[in-house]
Length: 328
Ligand code: UDP
Image 1: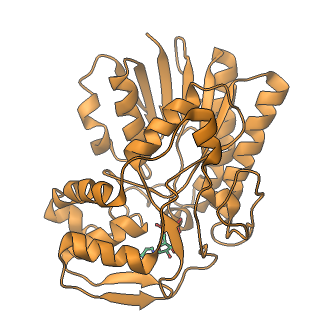
Image 2 (image 1 turned 120 degrees about the horizontal axis):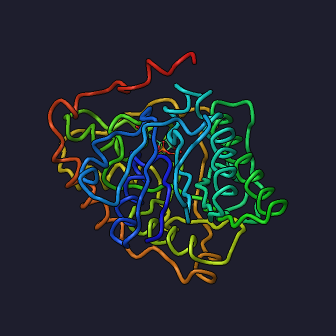
């Protein structure tokens, strides 16, 4: 049985990856320090013989006993609100954390895949964004802690590949959505759906003309699995090229939820990218991958998940575990 370590296992993407690797017959070792991840996301796995979980911060030395075949490094705060609230942890997990994961991969002879992001392109001046584009990132802006950590993460991963001959894979993930996103993480989809479910107006930041392209989580997971088992070590974009404005997105959520609320406008956050759409030519050519879930279907499945949340979960606006980590 192949053994895989998934960091960020209790998070949105990490938990879906745990499910997929369990279903594919792997022994899964999950790791998370639960700052932004939640045990609820992986609760159903604890009873399984081939799932283990460690509550550990990967920016500190990682010890895993036994053999490891694969490591997927998905630990990181990943929403603008999160990295504004915990900027140092965001920088540490993308630098010290990835270094520890790479060291572990080297010691175990494991192949490692790291989660990068469309944020490496910053506020892009090239559209859509191909992997060859170097980006337009403000290192000292509020997003700099995330963007630069992820850029460093790619650089050190390439260095381990070149210098140590480590088998490495880099996925640049564009906006992705699905069940288990945190309602209060500030990202646009949980924000809008949460507002609709609570009977609040939907908050559009700026004039709503900025664009994003949203990929359903199952499509992304399939792409990640294909990349892991490919022979390609350079970064690969993954996302759904179906681009819409945030105003259109708000309309879709209003229709989906049947809310009578309206949209209200708030200030656009600093350095909020004006447009974003992945160029997925590489993923298509190298992995034979493209997203297949239409937004209407993906949104409806995602809404089913949020509808089942309890009243307490719906009104929870503060981040549960932040306080004990801040100032460390
Ligand atoms: N956004 C919005 N209202 C909200 C939350 C987000 O209009 O309540 C906007 C945000 O300014 C951005 C887009 O939606 O332009 C996507 O934001 P998100 O935080 O989901 O992701 P990112 O900016 O990292 O793509």
